[in-house]
Length: 301
Image (tube, rainbow, N blue to C red; front, side, top):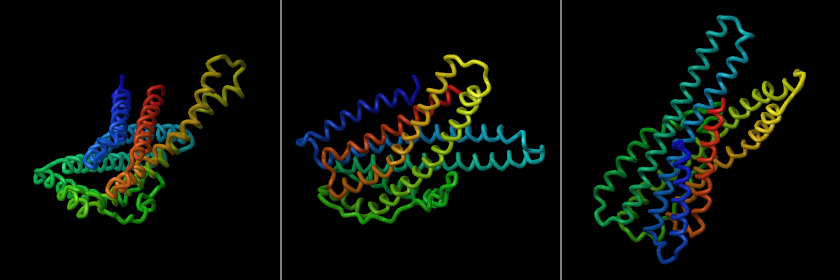
């Protein structure tokens, strides 16, 4: 069983438990809410890790197919030029994906420290960890803001800032931290949203390209040219048509970062009710499901 599959099942069981905890009014205190959100952030980070790894493989597969398709129409000199150009573009994309993973891990660390701060009577060490994370986020942000993923510019996808209203924070150190860095984290979560939207657009294009090419080679051309068709052709056609439907999974996964940002705002402003965690858990599930689907497709190539 692969890591993604194991983690998917484990996380589903864990999130169900967290949801049950959050629904119980006597336990659903502000401290517990921050703890639940910290765990949601941790699982979001794991889902993003899996998704970006599979997105990189998907991009390489799609580019390989394009290169092979174009190769026969190019001279040797043109082949060398286009190979170098496309390899550099792929290296740039893989570098951006690594940056996304690094950014997501930093947010995971921030939310974990925030959850610990909500429950701690000795905040000095935790405050130092928060300061370290904020410094790393500040250093990484310019690189990701100016990144492009495929044809999508991350900067063009960034939304405007949302004012943060701190409410119902009983722990002084936690309130001070949120007033100091809450607006910055809102911007970092908006950056995550822009990155995931850009990545989702690229993934959808790569998936559609591979499906179209496979459709032509494995289904359309045999149907037109082959003398006979048997059960393997039917199975391939079914697989392809189902694959096109799976493009909807990309749209669902693309909303996860936006939902995480909304959850953070509602948590800080004391607007997070028991049912408020459900959309976030569903979107994290969608990210894992998409990563698992891409892994399976890659293994069958």
